[in-house]
Length: 351
Image 1 (spheres, one colour):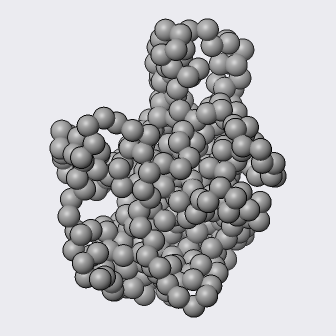
Image 2: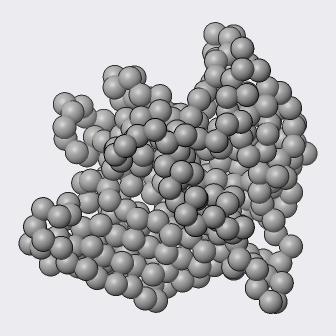
């Protein structure tokens, strides 16, 4: 059975849909099929094909430039712990940090619906300015478009960012080896559940706050303690389960997770249980997943836990040679199950 699954996963994603659905924006199987069939097919090039959090571009000096872009359509615009403004900064800063870069500059583009309150727009811009200052980046250029009433849900924001990767620093799935250790810098699913509850569509009350935060400083702390770090990713759309599947496919390894080691806050876990959602597939916006060599796992974990954004860091699994391209979850009951890529979109528009 595992051999059949492995053979199936080696196939390129197939896009069979005739129209775009919300699932195509969820970061799972449908997203992968859309990106491969439409965007990768149209724009294929060496810098794009790794499909990482950002592109790495060589400079004549020998350094690398990291370039990342992302759009933000979260609803509601404000949620416990953040807003679409702060999220638009944190998300792109974090994509750069996952490339090993030190973020430096951002652009910001706004699509604003006619009738949107100017005071609210100014407040979101102030959130962005505060988030950028805290992350050590500067918004240096941008664009504004206004569309008819009903053509956008208030405001959409797109940010792009650039940063420099220090000479000699290299991260990537090709560096991952069996025996490596998988860590997460904190609790799972905080952002997705916080946004879902903030919508008020569900008669649920829980003390859940988004974890949206800039991770560049945390990455530097981690790399200082564990210079052999192999791979980094922030588990946004599709959550930890999806990014581990991407790792397993790209590195052609197995990722074995320990259910008992997955850090989930009780209110978040309770909300997921009530809604029938697996926290492994719910987004974070202020956490990272790291793969480090086994001899550096202890100092990496200690360094993460010593940082305010990594206090709940945990070792959640390991890399194995087989079954290739598969993510397994060793359950608390002593069994195991396959963790597939996200199918569908249980929580649309959370970022």
